[in-house]
Structures are given as structure tokens and as C-alpha cells.
Length: 246
Image 1 (cartoon, one colour):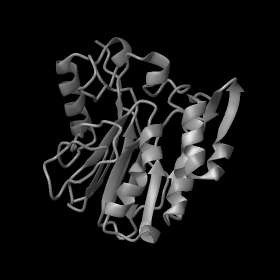
Image 2: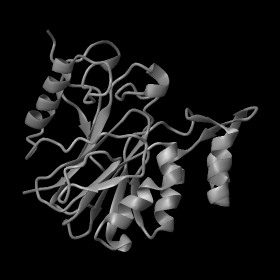
Image 3: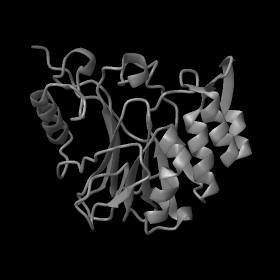
């Protein structure tokens, strides 16, 4: 059996030395078919033993200080503080405990990682169009104990603006919230538009006071390094994680 090398991406941002953050690709695991190869999600129909092995390989290869704090994501705006609750029914997580790993899983939706300038607080958020519309990013920043001006953010791999098609009702919902969102929807056929998740998220983060917003250059649909639900339907999930070093 050929064993792939685990590949991952590190954010290009000005995070403190005490912060470790990365996003996995689909390479480096043992899953087969549409889940090949480093699927890290348990809610898909992948072989459970493969998922366990993939998660163990992630922890061991990257020498993580602990098992990531996996969430049960439901496209909600729920944010959990990993230091205060065992509840994992959420789409975003915050921690100030060194070695505690905040993580989200995605396969076209937008993962966003956060840290403060002091390197004492981190967060991860999962934002599809519903999460963006309903305010999951704002809720994450609001529940952090850091001032927005002190927070850095990085937008990980998501479906790009040339591949994410939505209907008129989605476009109108965003425009009703903010008329400037109209610029992020380009019509490609009657009543259908290509939406720019990255630009929508960037505007929302700026509007709540974040000045340091990085990332947004990948497309999970066109880049074969990533899982894409839109392209494949039966597919795995990559992880975006962040933690404070011990």
C-alpha cells in the first residue's frame, strides 16, 4: 500500500509565535473512493476505522499537543467556549487554554481562524452561506474576550467565486442585510448567481472592527488538493485548526 504524505497549509498572517494554525488537505490518509484520502469527518459514510486512523495520523504527524476538539456542526451560529463547557453542538469554538485545539471541518464552506495579538486567545468558525447570513462570524468575535481591533483572522480554503452558484433568494437575503453585498453576486444565468463567500465574509469582519483579515485565495472546487461537496457530493472533510502552544 502506498502511504501518502500528509500535506497541509499554514496561514500567511502575522500571528504571534505562541500560535499554531493550519488547514489540512485531502492528502495523507487511508480513506478510499470519494473520501480519499485524509477524510477527518465522522458524519459521512466513510469507514470508521479509516477515520480513526486518519485522525490519529493527523495528531501524530503534526505532533499536536492533544486530540482536536471536534464539533458537531449544523450550519448554526452557536459558539462554544472549550474552556467552560463539554458541549460540542456548535459551528465555532473559542479557547484560551494552551494545548486546547479549536477546529472546524469543511468541504466548500468557509473556515475562519482567529487569534488575538497577545497570543492568549484563539477561535475557529465554520461558515457556509447560512452561517454567514445568520452571523456566525460576528457571534464568534463577540464571544471572544479580546477587542475586535486586536483580533487577527484568516480565511481558509472554501469554494471560490467562480464556482459557488446560488439562487435569487440567497442573493436577496444578503442584500437586505447590506446593500453593498450586491457587488459579490454575479449573474451567470437567469435567477442564478455566482457568490463570493470570501468577499462577503471580509466585509462582515471589517464591519465589526477587524482590520487584519488574511486568506481567501483558494477554491475547493477547482483545486484537487481539497474535498468539495459541490463537485463530488460523496466526499470527505478537511480540518482547519488553531491552538496556543504549551
